[in-house]
Image (cartoon, rainbow over all chains, first blue to last red; front, side):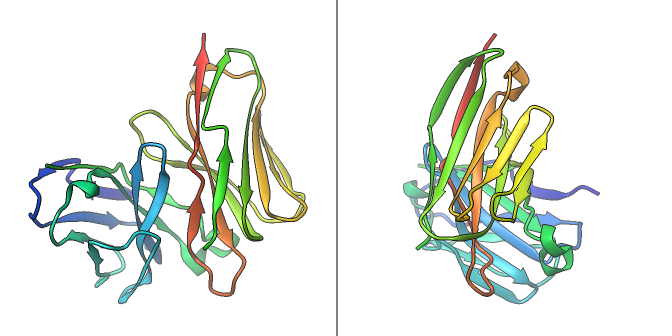
Length: 117
Length: 113
């Protein structure tokens, strides 16, 4: 199993550009999430999905869109990048209800380091 | 909304000293998880605590969940250089259907050899 994969690893954008951060998992996990990590701020939830076709907003959703057309993939779209979106982005998956009491254990991808100029 | 406070933000210890990080939630939690992130890496799951007053050990690491399920701690005995990294707690709310994990801001541990 590759686990959770993210592409690209690094990206530089200009203000106003759009792009999609890719995330995929091969563990058949129900739940997937996107977090951003900024210095001194910990991990903040952007969007999450509890299954294919179901998404919901987290703590900091503004400026980001998501979709979940398959169990495996959960892309994050930046429609019009802003310097405030400079951050490290982590995708995570967890088994969900199928995992019982451990269904919430999050498996993180390696991250995408995004810089918006 | 739910808030999880974690202290201290930074901790520098001499190798062999003990280390403790604390988490406090503004609301009662259904469970709390702990993660470790090595420099330049991604968070890695360490443990989940579910029961009130629960204590779990992993070698030199001891995890506690408070009686009121609003606070937790991670204690490392006799730190080693391999313990370097940032430790995060993450709490899950107790409401029905609650999914979101709220992360603390982390404690960055430096170990001086």
